[in-house]
Length: 239
Image (cartoon, rainbow, N blue to C red; front, side, top):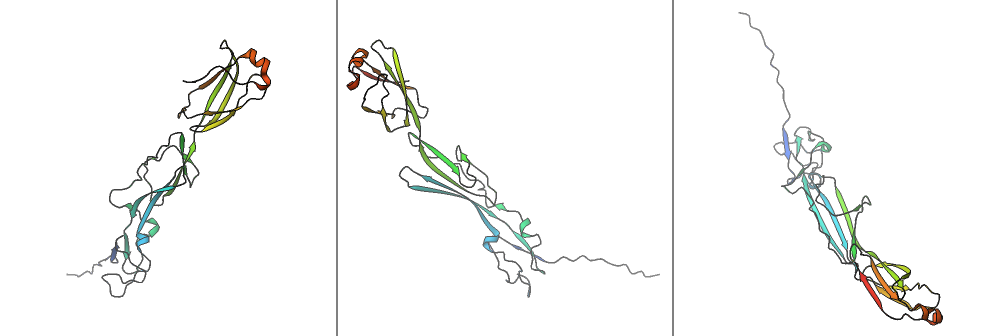
């Protein structure tokens, strides 16, 4: 019987060691299970853990600021070749995973102030937002949102009418809601007129058309226009 030697091929793999996010190691540390093998890269806590942070800064009318900070915790696990001391998969290719089940930034309701509009701005892009919605960030996302308040504006229409309720002139007044706006009355006749102050307090987020009606004695004005005063009645109609 002829004896034939049959080659046997063996494929050897290096031992690998798992480095968890909660058990970081430093470059030069001894690899567990070996006598003289050391990590050749830094696998510190910062390398294995990352936070996607959204910071919301709300500034009230007095200039006081409130911060809301939202964090999503990402982690990664790295397998290291126990012979070379290097990651088997390059670090930049190791996927990040959210820790536990919290993977979103929650929606945030902005406090409302009567007569003011909240201006919401993403400071990184300069984009104005309608609201602060729920969002699923990636591990590389960070976001800062500023919220300030801007007074809403409204209009009133002043109608000047004669004793027969005929409109003989109009004037539009614009100003911030919930403020007192000084108005120089633009009366139909020439002359020196006092300055009046008109309140826009009654206006709301969608300002209704408001009319302030002055009833004027036309004949009296024609005779005494140089020192005339408003006489009769004035009414404010909001609709």
